[in-house]
Structure formats: C-alpha cells, structure tokens
Length: 455
Image (cartoon, rainbow, N blue to C red; front, side, top):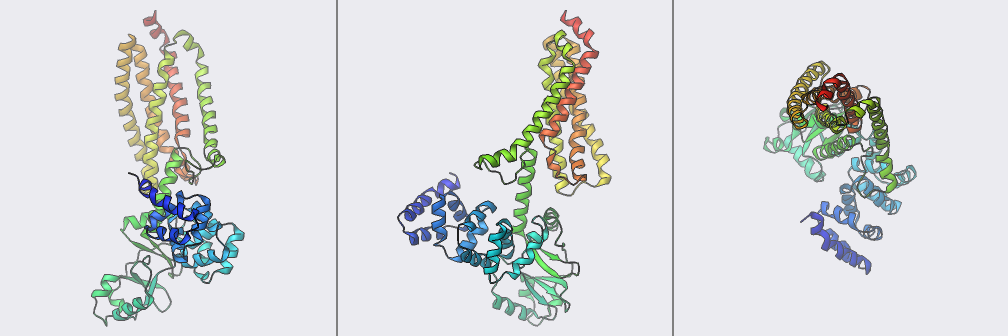
C-alpha cells in the first residue's frame, strides 16, 4: 500500500470536519500526523480546505508545514494567508527556509511580509546570495563560543539557549576578532573536564566554504569529508552561516532531478505530471521542436541516397539498427560523463585518456555487436556483403557515439552550460545523422557486390 493510500482515511476525515465547520477537530486530526505526512495530506486537500486549515493551525505548526512542502506549494500556501500571519510564520521558520520562501514570493508580497517581521535581520542578508550557492542554502541558526570559554560554561550556555532540534550540536569557536578558529562536538564537550578551556578540546582542522561556492561543490565537500555540518566563512574568516546535512539532501535531490529532466529534454525542473497545460508546453515543447529539426536533417541525409533505395530497397529495413545502437551507446556515455562531472571527477588532463578509453570501449562494443548482427543478417538475407556493411556501419557509429557522448557534455560545461543539456535530442541527432551517412555511404561503395546476391 502506498503512503498516500494509508493517509486517505485521515484526508476524508479532515475534509468532512472542515466541510461542517468543525475546524478544531480538523486541526486536531492534522496535528496527530508526522510533519512529512502532514505535507502529503495538505497536498491532497482541495484549495478551500487548505485555506481553512491554515487559518486554524498555530504559527509553529504552520512553519513546520511550510518547511515540508515543496517550493510551489509553499508559495501558494503563503499567498493564501494574511501578511501579518505570514510574517509570524516567517519569524518562526529557520532563516534559510524563510529566505527561500521570501525569494519565491512576488516582490510586493515579500516586502510587505518583511516589514511586518520581528526578526527580519537574520533573513535579509541571506537574500543577497543566489539560490544555488552556499549562501543561498546556509542558515544562521548556529551556536558559537569564544576560545576562553570552559567546557562547563559552554554546556550552561547551551542549556540557556535551548536550541531547536534542527540546530546541529556543533559549537563553532571564534577568537576575539570574531574569526572562526575551531569546532567542538557535543560529545567532546560532555566528556571534557568542567574547567577545560574550549581551545584545548576544539578541532582546529576547519573544512569550510565561501558563501558564493556552488551548492553542488558544497554537497561534494560534505560527502567527501563525511560532514554533518559545513561552516560558511567570508573572506575575513568570519562565520556567516552553516550548511547542515538536511540542506545537502535537498541539494542532492534538486540536482538529481535537474539532471534527469535535462537528460529527458525537459527544461523546467519543477514540472510535474499534473502541472498546468501551459507549463507542460513551455517545459517540453521547445526540445521537441528541436528534435523535429534534427529529424528533418537526418531525413535530408537519407534523401541524398534515394537512388540506393530504388536499387536495394532492403537497405531501408536495417538503417534504423545502426542509428538506434549508436544513440543508445552515446546516451550511456553522456550519463557516465555527466555523473563524473557532477562528482568533480573529471580534470582537464584526464579528458584525452577518458576519450581514448571510450573509443576503445566503443570499438569493442561495435565489433561484438557488428559481428553478431552482420553474420545474422548475412545468413538471413543470404547476402554476406549486406551483413558486412551493416557490421562496419555499427562499428563506425559506435565510435561516433563514443566521441559525441564523451565530448558534448564537456563542451557544454566549458561554455558554462549544464552538461546534462546534452540530452537525447542532441546526442540522437548526431548518431542518427552520422549513422545513416556511414551506413548508406558503405552501401554505395559495396553496391555492385550487394546486387550480385540480389540478382
């Protein structure tokens, strides 16, 4: 049973309670759910029920709900409540989440909400950073100490602050100039003797990033060093924020979605199966139009060899085999290269060795498949030369696939574009066109020999 199927009974109960104006009962039913399940239930309520429920939830619950909803749903929910209530919710949210929401709202709505907020200072400077940078992902909710603080004083400080569950239990140590000089984990703090100065137990091997570091690089850094929190320092080594593991999970999900959509030629990362018709067309139609142009180009290449099909009509049966195998092989290359780029595993000095390796693999794959298909078609059609040109064409197009699938993502990266945009449309255009050209050119060369077996 799917999660939403399990939640269907509670969705019906909440809807019935709201329909009969039993708002307290609806809110109580909603509060019984875990935060993630609340987001699922909220998504499946109709627009009127959402608005009614939001107006009868407390501020803290609403803030937690906004944290769980996806960006578009959060914006829609924020637009449905009063500015005063929205400001209270933003004050309750984590600074980074509040900044993300403000950045997605209309400028007028965001300005009104900021004016009404009591703790806008922690959020405003986060709006200065682009969404896909460390500054756009970081939060200012962290605990810092100075180097002269003792272990016991640090623990007392934590008790007084009583930080939220979302604040990682790492303490960041600053010197008298407010520069970060170390980090202390809660375990180290608890087992230290009470009067031990922080500077004696802190870890001075600081791994950090800058606010303008790309979010993918931040994710790679945290993954590589197995960090649960990553400090963000400015050019003066001042601690301006931290990125936590849950922030990075969001980044990884967002980047994976982006790559999958790009590989599938979908331009809008937020597109869903139930998105509006205009949104669907805007996100999908441009690439299909490009695919139409590339298909026409491939057709033009075939038309150049129109006389061949008059003499040997059977050629038309097998040209798609060459193009199809080339497209599949190139897509494999693209997937591997895009993934390697995302993980930061490709350096300039490795490009030539990688290309040579892929050419070798392409040659082997083309030879194996070419021999199998060439022998099979030769015996099937009782025409060894037809099998020969098919086998040779497969080898040639596999080599084309290796070159296109390896270099095209790297080329897009070099010009500052998303490597995943070298999607099936562009790759298939190259392998189809060149595959047809190779196959039909070989057919023209071997035409007299092929005709001998057709006579």
